[in-house]
Length: 115
Length: 112
Image 1 (tube, one colour):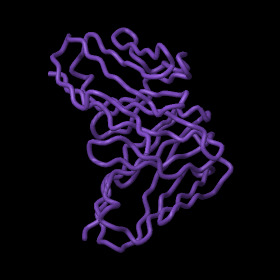
Image 2 (tube, one colour):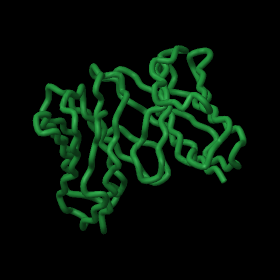
Image 3 (cartoon, one colour):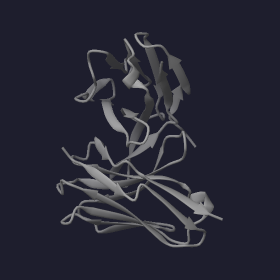
């Protein structure tokens, strides 16, 4: 069964350093999402792409976070500089229309620890 | 902004028991309500989606209900099994664009 691929699985960095996460959605899925999940909380949407265009980035801290999906396939989320409060699980998801609605498929995430 | 609450935060039950997980939301103008399962250190798996016009959805031993007027949804799990142990999250979609507002989840442990 096709899966959303994310790498790296774990990332440890020091504050003020730059980090990048990669996501490859399920083939054919036009919509891609980046969510952030702080320990003990539910995920929060950071950015949503439709093909290569940003649909919603209202909750993305744009002073330090950036996201791109240049060819409308895989995507990169970058943080520069990283802060202690950025420690979280970063989840990528893609969606397809199933039974009349957009069903979400999540990757296993990148666990970021900022020291 | 939509606020989604899940109670209890954790629940332990013996194998075979039927159980109900609760989800409440403050803004009843939802497009749909979704339930997910998350295993430790993993991503989320979509379980059920209830459209705003629906009252319930069923998949196997899972049944989710929706009462928009009271701002509540429940996930019923029948004949629980140890493999059901996971965190269950509900999320509301206000627009149909999958910009989901998640609850903090209920961590379920099914004891063999």
